[in-house]
Image (tube, rainbow, N blue to C red; front, side, top):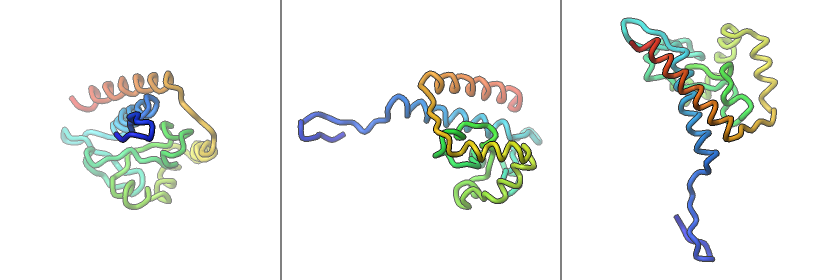
Length: 149
């Protein structure tokens, strides 16, 4: 914290809305990673949407085809898929291969629809954020029960 000229304390804490977006990011990411995982020999694995490599679940990120800065697609399930950390963080999403595999997974028409949504103005209300948090927490619980026995 710091003090301004009027000697009032000002905090740099996040707003309630920003906290809700962060909370939704966490549970949505967990949902996507679980949705795209599979069990083999009692362990969870996933196939990276970009490079196609099979890796341990704990190496998965929630990779966004259209980056998270675009709120219109940030929480769109067609836009988000399990992605290895290397592709997501160090290879700029390996976007060319991501798009090719995404077309194979959801079809060209859905990819084109997703791309058309990129620049739409979109803002979720706090009520909508809370509803989505509740929904994805329930989905995470369901998937954990289904996959992690």
